[in-house]
Image 1 (cartoon, rainbow, N blue to C red):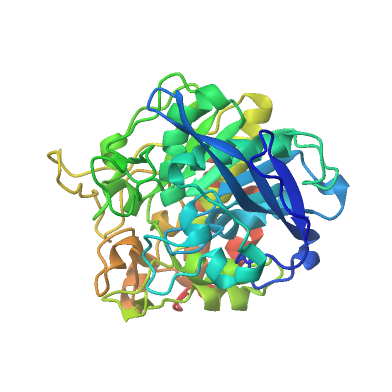
Image 2: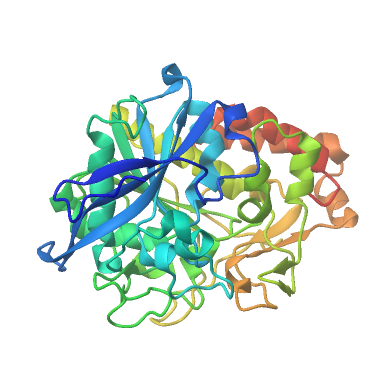
Length: 468
């Protein structure tokens, strides 16, 4: 392989032949009309102070994975640039897993960025068996250099600039819009990025902040998984003068928190460049993230999809007190959020506003908020969907136990036949009629994409009265 330049002032990218180490899915990308390529990008990054002033400089060599339509005419001009999540001790393309169906359907390109040191060299994680790049394939990734997460913000900006410039990264495709995206820990970094770095870097056209909890990442590179006064920015609200559209998508878990401070403490009203969607019945990590997303090519049968959504009661190698949340709404709402954000950037028309999830009482600082719930234990308020308005199960973002990670998986409790009969005395026909009406309302509001309608109805018809 050709050596990368040492400390280049302008980032330099080089194609790395072979299959990248990144869990994009069990399906064949080529069958979807997409192809993946890996590049190493070398440059010199800066760290930032709280006022956006540049501090130190350091060289880096990181990797990116570009997933793009094989047929250039399918490209819609938008590139989703994901800050890969490293909470599990390896790079994880969580936004791709959750929203790839919408990306492929609409013709987005996707770029996963190894922005953080843990994904390359290892470090603090939630996984007892982490797999950073240099462990997974020392020969392939041994040349990577990461100076620490204080420099991750500028590394991410520089990748965006490289994607914007004419070159081979997108195979001749011209990026018209760059959408920064990140989930969980990555969302916490993006929350800080938007406030501190974006005003000076001015790289991205919009930002999707997905499941960020209440605090933002710090600027000194300390791990947010060991939060302290120097590693996180508590109750971080987004700045009032946002430069570009920002859409924040939160699950119940994210709003109430647990070991992590809940987004409740960082809530703020919508603004000209801000929308916040809090999804009723959704969990931070659910069956779609754990099982369905990796097999959901768009060609799977309804039977296979239903089987993948079926309740499981284990996570992180331990048996849980309740099944993991198996509701599909998280996945479908994030799809609509991404497409809605793209339209917002293109047209200036913001996505629909959503009511926040309702909270019981007024929790005191430091307390965990409790969501207001109906007689079935389903949250009130928030982004509504047919799975919570015409339920066949109690779906929640909190309340599980049995393992240290149980707090992020929510729970799902299928209703028994006696309850279903009371709710829907007309049986399956009544259920499907009411479900379809609720789905139509969610689509009309912009919280679910119309293109998903048939699949959702088929899944509801197949699953009623069963366990999926």
